[in-house]
View 1 (cartoon, rainbow, N blue to C red):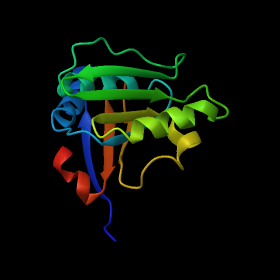
View 2: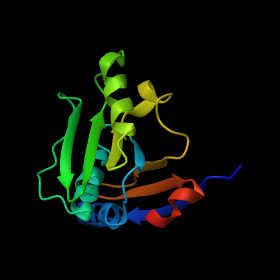
View 3: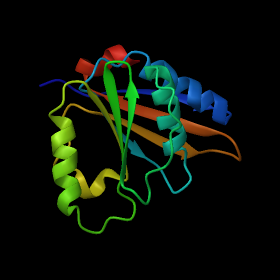
Length: 151
């Protein structure tokens, strides 16, 4: 059994966070699942915006806090962006997430993933964003060896 690895960096601006995420997004192949963990306003949606940009999407990324999920076309890939902050019971969203996980052309980003943790595959990337100042944050990315190509 392989052990997760961790990579850390500091971001001193929103643009830096966007660029870090875009670099990861540019390496996606489809089938990647990214769990985003932070406090409210911690930069999760900003990270997804960068991810989409790196994947080549021209669509405007918006927080799915009220709609629970959004999709963005990026060439042959689709970025699924889930936000389960307001969800008390996963219900049908668990099924929607499970369906997206079956699509080999999907890249899935999940904000507030605790409620659907049992649906997420074991081999996913976890991005922890911790605010360290007004515009700065630490990004700690844990990943299995099978996703090392993203970093």
